[in-house]
Amino acid sequence: MIETTPQNVSVVISGIANPAPLGLCAFGMTTVLLNVHNAGFFEMNSMILAMGIFYGGTAQVIAGILEAKKNNTFGLTAFTSYGFFWLSLVALIVMPKLGWAAAPTEEAMATYLLMWGIFTLFLFFGTLKQNRATQFVFGSLTLLFFSLAAGDFTGNPAIKHIAGFEGIICGASAVYAGMAGVLNEIYGRKVLPTG
Image (cartoon, rainbow, N blue to C red; front, side):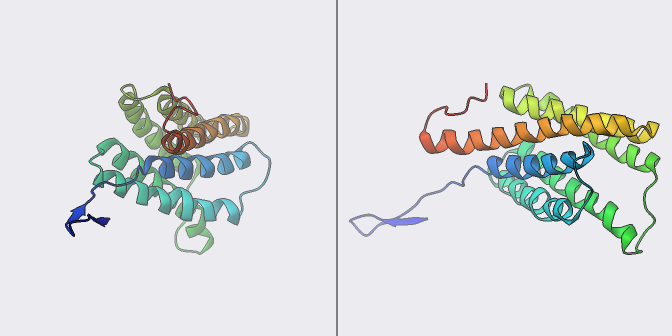
């Protein structure tokens, strides 16, 4: 943005808005909706898939790219990766229905989820230098991925059902952290504490 001073000298104001609240809310809301399904409240449907493509997927990738402009490697890695997690998850569900590829087996899905759990565990260690809200999001997400992987490895639907409830908590914590970022910035004080 360029402002003109009374002496007609242009001053360039640098800076970029904080993209973390967008990334956290996109991740959190999509995670809640998928895990309401995992908990058994409704079937997999186009609402979840659309959220996965457009909010959980695309919005997080945008947030990650903006984090790169802020020189935040953690934010770039996390938001961009989880954005593409959502896009790949939707592809795993939709591609077999379109006849483009075979549906993944339970073992394949378990391996996919296990890899994301390991990745998230490493990112969790990165949150130990950040606030408690971020630590909770990544800690609960690590638990969620490992629980969902265990459900697929064992073929036990009860594990995935329980993981769904844990996933609702995980997603809600991300929405909380995102809204804390927005409201704390607007009010210039800690309206929602993050620890």
